[in-house]
Length: 530
Image 1 (cartoon, rainbow, N blue to C red):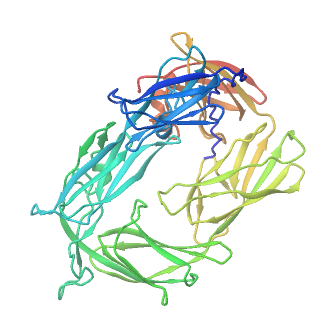
Image 2 (image 1 turned 180 degrees about the vertical axis):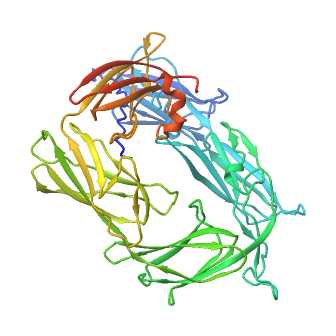
């Protein structure tokens, strides 16, 4: 699919008043948003004709003197707490950057901080004995840019008593998991005579399942400590050995990923002279070995080999490192051209498969004229894999089509095979876009909200969003049918997932646009989930 840029409009504070020589004071309290109690010794920053800094006292109080009049923003920080800015509050009813109007009528103000949460627990074996040195993954499941993601937020290790604690956590739902851990602490690479396997403590997700799909999330509320204990079980594990070919000596690294694209923290070794590698304590499963090598010119080379481990060691694995793909991007304009030069078009390759080692790719450098209304650039260092192609919205144009050879990239993904030379990505722009204006209402009143414009069916447009104080506008829209939504927050809205958005479709406003058409609509605020 092809993504339009996310047009986020942040409400502007009023212009600063002219300095008439009068000076004012501002005072307030830093408070714990969960308990309402004052927060002492917090760093308070006030932005008005420069930065003013103060520490809250033992009672949470602070004061600024000798201030000019005008509109300003204020924030606070303290270890163990989060400010609205750090949380990215994103609530239509509460700005993450509170505005204060300094003057003779300014009253006492409250600056909120949210206390961090924590997860702690104890890891034991089947005999109830503590297991030290086990790495624990703290994984947050949340929405980012309209997509549900699993992100490792912390990694901690159990101590000699088998205990662990991860602090400084945002409020949210977390999955807690152990990393597979070798049973043999002494001589970990040695095997007993006639034993053809290693023995490990299995990877587990809380409360004791082997896969994330069956796991139970742990809910962390502000300032709350949650317990998550584990009883580990043992299983057989094996070794993977092989060699890397085609890499640059001294400039090559190797990583083992599981079937979900997560790094496997197995013990490993790498002989740089022979380009030979080995992984220990690998449980049965499907894995991907990724080798990366960087040339003196800074170009990245990749080698990817899939390996299955069942009931024995896997040896003689060959990982062939090859140059990464370079993909030309061609931009063509249909219809009237808005200006003498071809527009700058940003194209992004977003990896479909979870892989922390694949950054995707962006167009680089300036556009090179190919002729009247055309331009070309390149995406370099593209790792083999499957990608969603995103094209940022271009002012005064709409995106008519995006293709690579015979692949329609508005519907299908771009697949890059190792060592391949993909066909150019061809972006066609049209100079007669539609536009949309409107208001968001609740109870007959205009209200602040996040507005989403989602195309229906296959389209070269993708979700666009704006934060509005009641009135919104979108331009550069392709002709077609759209659903328009308004939410108080986008924190839990998977707007990149058509199935997830079906639950809100009957409360959205549907609109159909033609070329050069401009429409005004009214959108109701959607509250209360599904």
